[in-house]
Amino acid sequence: STVMAALSRIVALEVLADFDEALTLTSHIELITVRRMIEREVTRIIWADAPGDRAQAVDTAVRWAQAISDPVTRYEALAYAAEGAATTDLPRAQEIAQGIPDAEPRDLALRLIVQTIAESNPDTAQNLLGRIETPLQRNLAGAILIMRRDTEAPDPSTREVWLCEAYLHVDFDGDGHAEYRKVTKVGKTILDN
Image (cartoon, rainbow, N blue to C red; front, side, top):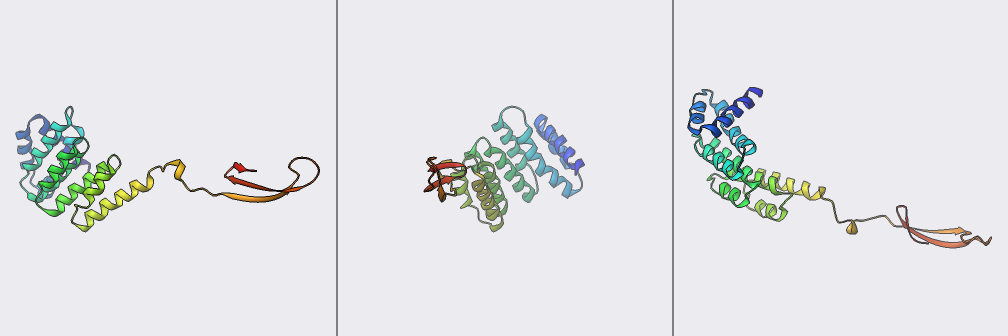
């Protein structure tokens, strides 16, 4: 796991420095599962850690993903590139996601976009949820939206509170005679006495 992360970081740095050399570097990794994991992870590292222009980093991530020979890995890498684009350029993210021909990785991309924008753009996130076809990705994206909605701080003027209405037999005015008083309060705040 640590070795995989280190290899992924090395390849990502090489992609940013010399794209063609990075392709050659990964082609020498003989274990196919290891190569695919690194190829996918490199896409995330590129848009997350690339210095400078975010749009250029996303373009590099997309270019990297499109150069991956295995279609499944390529589409998953494109999904991660779409996630990266969603942080700064939502239309570009949607364009990347819609360019993925297979439903499962396309829906992965849409879910990652929903996850990225759920807080900052909940209406668009809700609209994207309707475009996700596969039940697993749709349910995950829906759960993300529900969690975000439930953790939002509500408008204090619309929150529900407990109202306590009490009738007391007390000498409130100090004249020596107890009278009935109605006291209404919320928490420690007296509303009516």
